Image 1 (cartoon, helix red, strand yellow):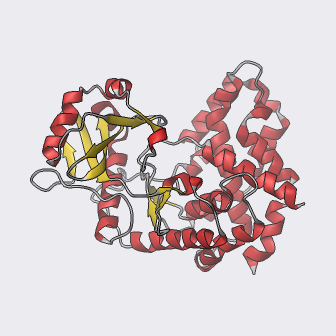
Image 2 (tube, one colour):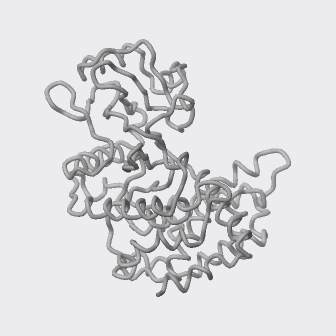
Image 3 (cartoon, helix red, strand yellow):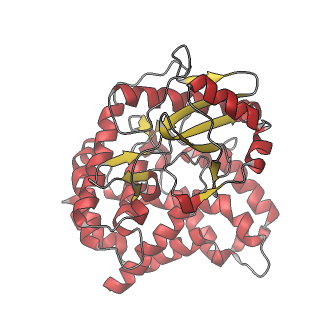
Length: 377
């Protein structure tokens, strides 16, 4: 049984690691860097001289070597090792990107500035000339921060003490984010898209409609229809809309947590931060933190992660059925997003989509049952 549970939870790690990610702010290890910055500059429609201009505005020397991460949908992070401030990261948004998601970028900066003032260990925004932490002109909008020392939690030997520490770190994030107010209008503030599957004009609903049009076989696909039916019958709209909204990191998992030699923790990658259901950060954390590598997961570690969260979950009326339903909804959400990629590959079928595989394994496992008694105690 334990061996089976290890396989199930490890599969969840594969799922979450494969989730679409729209930003790449992070402390970058040398082996994760690429010094061919040409493609990134081209995507952003800027020249290397713009980086020189930014360094001048930040009052640092432009180094001879500049790097970008190998991974990342936007490719808008530039890593520089400067003599004045050490390793810094420019996060650059082109005008094209700002047209699509300018409000999200503004919100990201607002949240980071708020957390900086409250001394939470998140990216600390450096000031440009004249004092602003965000640089903006006709080419792009940019903010910059110093890289944290250490490595990502996903590459660190896990222990039960670390699992508890990370959970307490998440609790601290929620507490430090309390009292945040945005200067954006309510329509501009990024919100969770989780429930848009229930609205005919919603983003996920539209993706689902197109998916079924492009791949009609899914209309009679037993596993996919079972997953869809579970979510449709869960009554999540009423139960989630009753929840108080709060700041959600949106990507709280091991690769976005930095741990240094003293085992101090830092949270990075705020590209998906939004106003929404804070249980989402707990779900991502409990799924990934206790089991970042094969054979490392222990059921007791999952309970250890849940322990500091139980008071908040109870106070916010997140019962075990709701918790499980939101996990399933996320499985469907990312399945809808990635099924076209899976089925577009030669000799690939829907069953090979990681999210459908995870859902199938959840149906066949006793993972949730093993957590239920502890969760409800």
